[in-house]
Image (tube, rainbow over all chains, first blue to last red; front, side, top):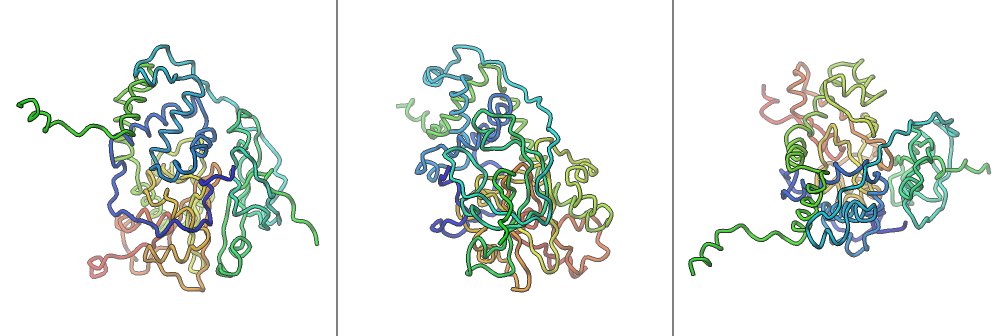
Length: 206
Length: 209
C-alpha cells in the first residue's frame, strides 16, 4: 500500500535527531510492548501481518505515534482480529475466555529455482497494490542489476494476507543512485534493495 | 488534608499509552501468554546481553584473522556463532565490507529492520522518518549530519533492508592500530560504525601509547 510508512525519498521530515547515550528503553512500558510482541509474533500472527498492521494505522496517527506506540497498536489490532482477545476484555480489563491455541510454523523452506542470476539486468514492476508489499515506491519501474540471490522467502504481499505458502527467490538488486533520484545524486553512488522475484522482470532488450 | 499530602508522594498516573500497554499486558498474563518474569527477562536481555559489543567482537576478529573475515562475508550467521554469539533462525545476516573506495550504510525505509542479534535494538534515529526518508535520497548530506564527510572518490552504497536479510557493515581497520589486541580493536568499533554512519576512530590517548 502507498502509505506514509513507505517514506524513502520523502521531503519535509527535517534533520536526523540524534539522542546521545540513548537508553535501550525510555520507559518500562516500551519493554512490555517489546515482550508482548515477542511472545505473540509467530504464534498468532506473522511478521508480515505485524508490519501491515503498523502500516494500516491512519497516516496522521502513524506520524504522531512513537515507535512503540505503533507496535502497541499493531499487537492490539492483531490480537483482536485473531480472536486472542476481545474488545469486551480490553474494556473490562479481565480475561473472559482462554486464549486460542497458537499456530506453529512448521513449513519447510522449499527448494526453488532462481530465475535470475548475479549480473542479470532486471526492471522492477510498476505496481501499486492495496495490501502489503516490500517493493518501495521509489524503486518501482527502475532498472537494476542482480547482485545476490537469497531465499526462498515467503512473499510478504501474500504472507501478510493469509497465504503463507507463496515462497519466492529474493534478490539483492543494485541500482545506480541516479536511476532512482536523477541527476542530483552522485554519479558514483549506488543502492541495493532486496526484492522478491515477482517484483522483477527481465530488462527489455532494446 | 493528610490524605492529600500523602497523594503528593505517589508516582504520577500512567500516560494513556502506558495505561493501554499495561492493560494489554495484564490481559495476556491472565490468559497465560506472558508472565512478568518473561517481560523482565526480555527487557534485561536487550539492556545487558545483546548489543553492539557483540558486533564489535565480530569486526575485531575479522580485522586480525583473514580466513575468519572470508567466512564472515560468506556466511554471517555461521561466523557469528563461531564466536559463541547466538544467531536465531528466521533472518539471515549479510556483512558488507567497506573498501577504500566504497562506503556502505544501512537503512530500512519501510520499517525498522536491523541486525539486532549482533547490534541490539536500533536507536530511535534509525527508526525515525528523517533517517528513513533521507538516507536513500541524500546519503552524503545525512552522513555529514553524523560528522562523516566522504570525498567524491568514495562511492556510497546504501542498503535498504527490505527482506529477511539483515545487513551489518564491516568497517575498515584504521591505520595506527597495528599490534593492538582484539579487545583493544573491539573498543573502537561503535554501533554507528556497523550501521555505516561513522568510521572507527582512534581516541587521542590511545594514539600516544
